[in-house]
Length: 115
Image 1 (cartoon, rainbow, N blue to C red):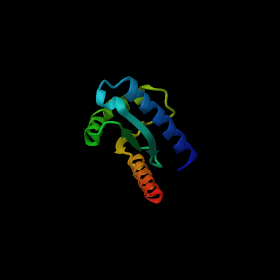
Image 2: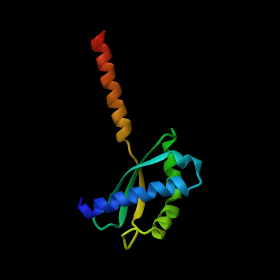
Image 3: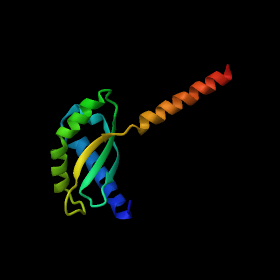
Image 4: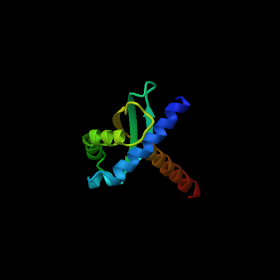
């Protein structure tokens, strides 16, 4: 990833997070955290990775996809250094769940070693 796409990805990350927190009325989306935005090399597509405190990840994903046009139109209104705002696709970020699973396995191993 080039420095330019990384910088634009970080900018989109910040703006999408702000839109979700301040402008979307859906209460289920208030517990969404944007973890990363990956831009394609031609800047036409953006994968937006998210996590949520809500247990129903599929419903949150569905709600985010329904709000996709609203989020994109709000990005167009903001002063972002892009000629064209990329198409957004939301992806649940499983890295935190994976990290928690690894941590619990390590704790279990330490408990077995102590006994």
